[in-house]
Length: 295
Image (cartoon, rainbow, N blue to C red; front, top):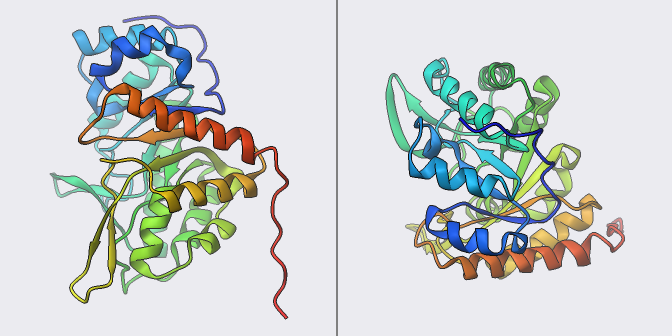
């Protein structure tokens, strides 16, 4: 097990999701990106080449740790063994940030290869808050929670997503990942305005931003349907929304380029990261816009 000094703060730059095939390119020019993010579940084994390669990258770049299998929103207890493995990866690599999804992926001992939505109710809120408290206690640190991409809304919900997220932050003190692509996908699918969502989001709690590509489709009635695919460049309207987010924030935030399937050469990811770095530099320096009252 490698020993590291205190983890460096994740810089307010663009990073990329770490792929083993890109190790050489990253080590050859580590300053092309600000950090790497790993999916915790890919490194829950004890050793082997993946850990050796990640250790070399971690010696040169800060690391953000992103879980995809903890099932924070599950109706039932967290998997204690999985949480212990997550804590072990965090202890081994001392990442600057640790995060998970506002979603569930397990039920009654069965595990699903999807991040599934949950109804926004008082009972769900209590369950999610208890799970986050358990995770933060196990890790000995604050975690970030990511807003989901949505394709439907539950009739059972008694509050909207923003009210739910704000209540989770208030109860647990957790931070947030603002996935801008997820906002755009959900807004298109559920018929709300992405800028209104951003304006009401608890931006003070945001510790990281995610950008990704999505696929365009249509539902049974012919209405637009977007799928959060992570398999292509970030779309133009998502870049525009990212600029608006940074203008509202008034501060730079570590920003991840997510590309998890049909993974391109590192050069393509680095180019997307360079574009995000340019947006960070240009928009954060500008004054935040104000909305003129109607009438």
